[in-house]
Image (cartoon, rainbow, N blue to C red):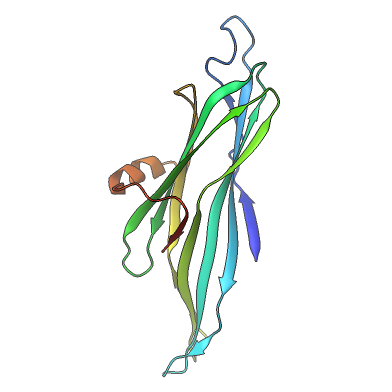
Length: 179
């Protein structure tokens, strides 16, 4: 099943340096959408009669930018980070990346983060109770720079940048990340 959830993060952000100081300010709009593809594997039986079903969710975020300024925004850099907690160990990991582009007047651009695979298992016990254990996303942060100046930032939940700084170690390799 594919699902995309639009967070209420449509922001009106002033694009620094996009227009002269005396001119009317024009917005750069950013929307962040979480996309999820759920996969379920074949169920198996455990010796005690419980039914186990492997889970593999593929999650990525789409960041949409829209330029409403009167000029082209050059050297736009979008930096993103996602905080993930591993299922078995509980270890927190940061997956991060960056995309660069230019936005002409009125142009919209969609950028996707790397795919993050979240593994887990759903157990249905003989008594009918259901338990689920899987890796999870704890939050994300997105920053947009124009010409090296920060013009937009969003995090969900709000304390995610602080939590990312606490656990950040080596930079993750781009591509697909499995937990």
